[in-house]
Image (cartoon, rainbow, N blue to C red; front, side, top):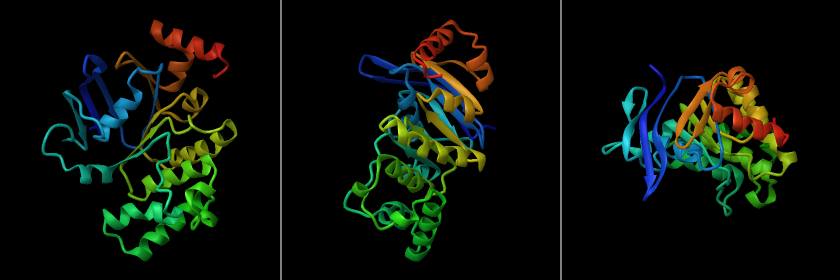
Length: 247
């Protein structure tokens, strides 16, 4: 049984259809990269998995249990599924250590000293222990995004969703964030990434999914999707990426 099973998910905003019967399985310890043109449904899919958005039809299951529809405890669900956005969303009036320990203290009821010890250990892992008592506006964009990832990891999620986490960064800061994702992948974290970083997707993904018009148009290992795509739309999309010098 897959960790996450998405079964014919539909999502629309009024007359605009975003997900059109999308189905996808995500295995435990798997890194899945979602690629495709803007508006194809990548970010919406991540938000639906985390229940920040609600699908109108279909079903999403975690550990075999339905997490869509009525009767789902969203607080419990979001302990299992962490999400990091392209905007860092750190509280500006709180220090780094306060930002990353807030969830464990309020939601998990963790002891304050235990939360701080865990937070400092994770900050040390990403080279930012010396910034623990700084406020977010004293950090670079890359540093803030790394803190946002640590904040999600503080909840020990079974699944981490990453939504275009490098798109708001200057090019020289992108590598800082991608290094953390590489490290998490090497340690077996289950992740789903919506990304425009094609070279990174080719390097780190176990499975690449090309989304088109709200469905998984083609999926497979990076060697297949980037080296020998089968679908005409996948080929056309990658040709534009290559012509733009992004792969």
